[in-house]
Length: 202
Image 1 (spheres, rainbow, N blue to C red):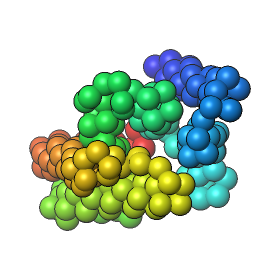
Image 2: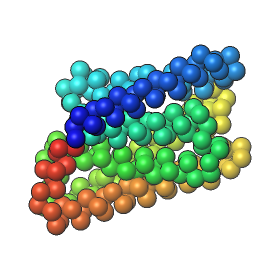
Image 3: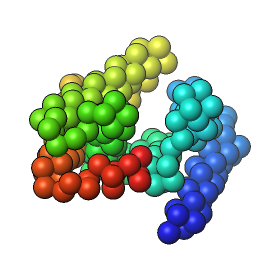
């Protein structure tokens, strides 16, 4: 099973690199600066697991790497770079929902490393997951806001929707965080081996 996940990770990284080089080689002259920077960001992003190991001595497990690379492929490569956000109405909401779930996983990693992910503290753990998800969502919207101001873009669709797009993105990410935190609360309460199972992933 582990070998299959490793192969899948290599495939996902390969797909991300193909998207990046395809855009930069064949569409470089027609792309705005903001799109060029977004496309080029794939390279440092796929190196995150390696950098976490080198800098913080945290080895991201194969399963978590798969979730990470899959999320980058869906949200960044397919959604932003190849434009599925514009072509498929619900694709943007799917990406932000996954952001809420992924944020919950990251919050679980932090809680587990601090010894706070256990049955006795499940209320605090779930509340932390919710707050962490909101924090990540807010920081992303801040990033989009400042990038639009600096690069004269409109990633938040302010000209078209006002604040509707921003609020929808944050709300759907919050829903993802709520569902994930609820899942953790139930599993911590009923499954005494939940943390050990989670440790195998994270």
